[in-house]
Image (cartoon, rainbow, N blue to C red; front, top):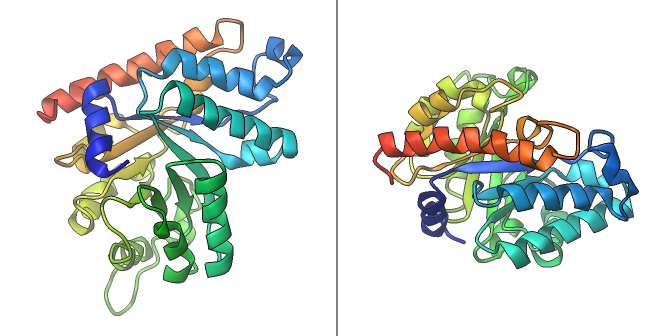
Length: 277
């Protein structure tokens, strides 16, 4: 899927919502624990009730790896289910990998060949040769961590270069944008740093941005759109807990849909205001 195809899906669904499948077996409704695969059963219902509202799903690998082989089986079944039922949906492995070339090549093989994800999040700290192996796959994406939404982002990401005055996240953007294209590289920019999106857009005006932090983390969708939207929308805004854990009873999937609809309606209004649909 290239950038134009992704934008077409945004226009079709009138949404740029990404739903994070951060499925914690300790938080899912208790009645699902009686099923043969509680994690997949939870994901399946969330997908069944929200697929028409979301353009992307983003499983966070930690929630699956923590369960060992069973968790990876649930992950595999989840990706295959989305592929078979809703092939138009963009699937992101939130894995935050980053290692030297040979290891990155195996990570790429795992996420793109074995699990058939469209994209994987990658940490840039080890530089170009740790990222390039992911880009050998046609129609697949690297989503590079640039400016994250957590408090610890201030530990390193805002350190200024004494010569250029650039903050570290700006250096990451300026350097890495030469590694790929707008059709195979996105960036993670946290919604809680929405005021920085205007500066970021001066460096990467045309790239898609994956924006976590809306919902439970308190980021403003209005601000994200105001500062981050471009001529192709250019945004995938993620919400995880606020949607998937809207309730913990037998109607959890319906309640998740209700929350997703609230976000989608707001997104539709923002797309209309920007004259993108």
